[in-house]
Image 1 (tube, one colour):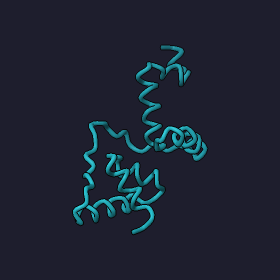
Image 2: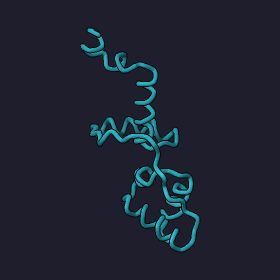
Image 3: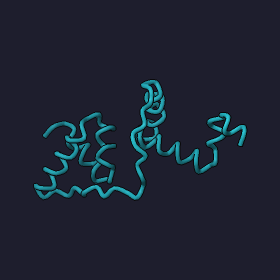
Image 4: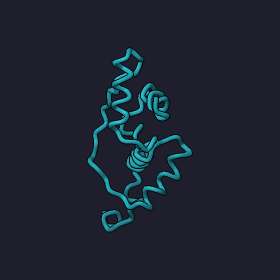
Amino acid sequence: MKSDTPAILALARANVPPRDIAEQLEIGISRVYNVCHWHRSEGHDVPVYQGCENQRIGRVLVKPEVLEALRTHAVPRGLTVRQLAAAVVTAVVGGDLVNAVLDDEVARDG
């Protein structure tokens, strides 16, 4: 058994999305799928990730320094960078703070 297997299984059993498991453990997503599939086929209790009703808005590219800055806030919270970014966007939109955050011509001109 490879050293990442227990962590993959623990996160999968906590219903963490495979993509987030791969990101958190810094491994390929195919490794996550292979470990989960093999353990399921051997009769182990590894749930199949069901996803959620949230909508993906595509792939967002950010500069490496932005990614690292997000990581410094995500790690202490036990989140992946992707989870933190989603939480930040949700908080900004939910708090009606988009104009305050962007402070651009649209925000000023209404």
